[in-house]
Image 1 (spheres, rainbow, N blue to C red):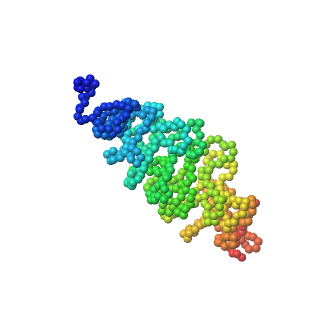
Image 2: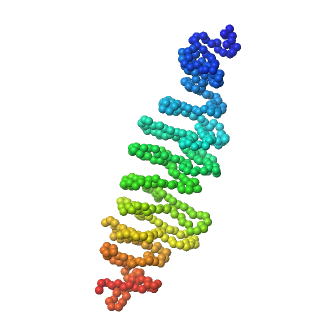
Image 3: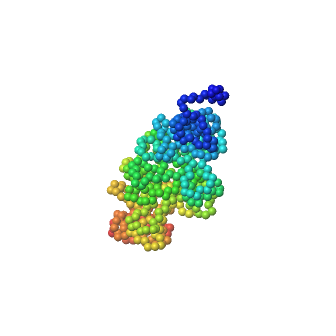
Length: 494
């Protein structure tokens, strides 16, 4: 009879040994009960849940089917969703402080291996992803909370050796020979891509809206002997150097870089808003290969072309604008400089300039209705009371015993083909007590001679002229009211 019933129900004939029940149902799930075989099934007729005994015949442990699996779950041949949580419930692996143990054999808590084995057409999301997360905020949030679509956290509680230790790691591997990435000029391939989308009704009333936020929560007392950087750009050994380290596309930002950090002075000059190399022995090394061809280096290059329509009112283009304001507290030991440049030379070279400025007008018809000046300097003493022992519009100091004998403090040259009215022009809308002063105000530190001019016969020195009394050796031509006059000079003081 038992065999006949099992056959009709298409069941395998149950064995009476070992003891224990194989099936059961009811409103109460047995707990730590005796008499249920391992893997026995119990149907909860009240809640409609199917349980399986993962305990023993002497102490049952019924769990809903699909939970607390000890032998793993293998799903094959599913054409759509293998696991689908439709309306409620969450997916969890491990609990805090009792995580899933990882091993050398199984180093990944979640491993997703997928392939695009056909030509994929963009669906509702417009994308295809190995892992896709969409977190929709469908209710007003009034409490302080971090809302994160995908959260990566690496908790380091023991020492780490060499390697890349990161919370989130994006890696694009282009490995097949002959791979071509096509598309259009806007096609982007990146290890990480971040975007913010908002409609016309969006409003940011306070706080920040950032494409990327990099925050340092490293304790101020932590010991950092390696390199710590908010963003680091590198190239692996023997690989292609990034042609552009950071690129801002035209019109992508109102201010491409806004630096408001490193505002605390120190004695070591190590607080910088922008730095390439350091002082003294920490400077960057620039290596020349030598051989044929020029080798030029421009670490900072700013080049612009102005187009469009004439502005409605006077407008200014400042390729570099600098401002330094000292108007709050007196600081008698403070030295103020908008720029501090130097060049240290201890080997042969050709030319040396701290600054080389040029203005080049083209061959067309050009009109500059205001001033044209390679260097425009204004020293404004203000309307208050100013005390300063050395107050100069231009301060040129020649220093060092090795200074060549033919050195010139101020050199003005007019190249062939150009005509210049004045080499030096002095104007005094106010009062200029002396157009040129030799020496300091006490008469010391004066030059040996006031002027050095060519010999007679080479302008502006002319042949000897006879004046009243002692015959002059020669004359120097000057303009007085637009007319040529002469200063005579003599071979002796008397």
